[in-house]
Image (cartoon, rainbow, N blue to C red; front, side, top):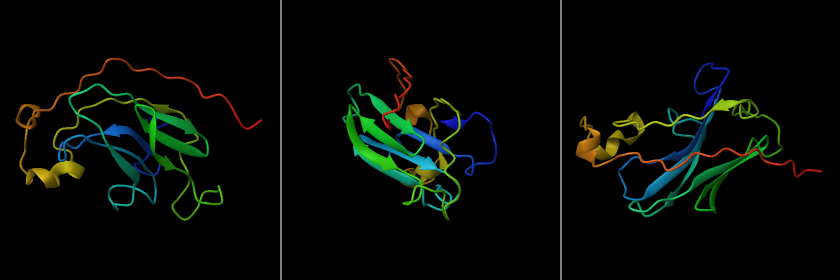
Length: 146
């Protein structure tokens, strides 16, 4: 997901609901990128989950102003938050209080995944990869703070 207002990456934020490099079968990652936490510094806030790649799965996030939770098939596997005191910290402002666009793409030969392919330019056919989407659903979370 990318910010609807635009701006320089990574300061304005990026939310990866689901990423697969194809390097390790079934390895799915979720991450946020922002000023101090991003792949260029190899400091992004991320984690991974293993899912059977030949089966359908539901990938989701719960996104609130003070945290983002990642799930595969309802199983929580990652949480990202602003600095421990809840304020923006040395890692830069928490940009995830703004509206974001949902972006779906198949990024073949992405820089972050190139290491496992010996830096060869490979096509989707070479990798045996495809993106198949059954549905996309967006819900608004109810405020549970009151």
